[in-house]
Length: 167
Image (cartoon, rainbow, N blue to C red; front, side, top):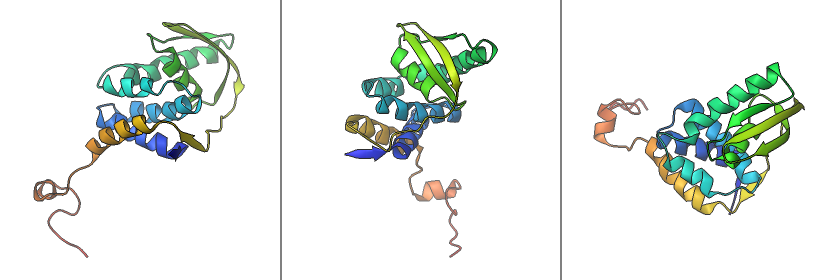
């Protein structure tokens, strides 16, 4: 089955939220997931990152990428990003950066990534992604944690319109 980039991004974001990530880190994980799958990188890295929550790469990668991109603004010749054993996933975060940096060259090892920016610009996500059914199943299960079940207790707690029907 194939999925749109928007579906993957939204589902990955909700899955990260359901697994305990803060909103911004979850949103950045959603964008990085699309790039990660579009580049045919290992799907297991995404599910492993979700399993590591409420800690792990989903929390620190956006901060490491922002720090490196800030360094690139000061010195376009290059910057280093801590990869902490997750170079492919951190590279996906770099490529999904909301700052419009086009990555010219990335040298990776298990612990650091060297980045050189060519120019600013935007990247176009792929239209459809496939071969990620197991990842989709894991993400769907975690995303379901963000939903409030419909029950009298949730209604009394303020979910929905409460116990009144305004129709």
